[in-house]
Length: 172
Length: 78
Image (cartoon, rainbow over all chains, first blue to last red; front, side, top):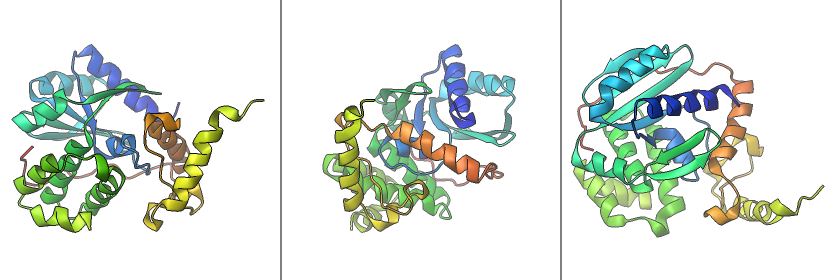
């Protein structure tokens, strides 16, 4: 198993030990939703109430915390990174609760919905417009899953960030 | 040796390669546009495909830049 897979397997084991049920978001969730691209982004959505115990568990695993707020945290360990988003608003809590489970070579993973993933990608882009990778991911997810997407849910996310016209643009 | 188990999935992959956009090119696919067939019945697991891709990527680029600045922004709505 590769170092990257081993890192994810170790993180899943840590979440199980801390009785936390995260959902995969970010680049690896994009992969899980059929857009296979190179990424080393290990990003999880976790319930906000678990932030402290997960923080301590990651420190125990040798991670260094670069940044931590009520919304997000960034950890690094040598050449490995791990990012967390905290679900404390109703939308994120719902997306976390509705994440679907999947067996993977690294263990059982919970993966956020395509619509939710697009919402988080949009949030990342709105927060940092240099993250054009997020827009590329959204475009690819829209293209592949267009027929099955809940467009009302998607439009609500884009409206939330005052980007309603961007969705129409991305849909082409 | 029996290769028949993956024949249908491989054919599906090949068909989708032809349909995919040029901007979906992966290095591992040697420049051929590649998009996985949708649905669990295809027999292609994107996570397994990604692990395979990353093995090659890590051989070519053993050290990737790690995030050196925190997540930015004030627009946390989700």
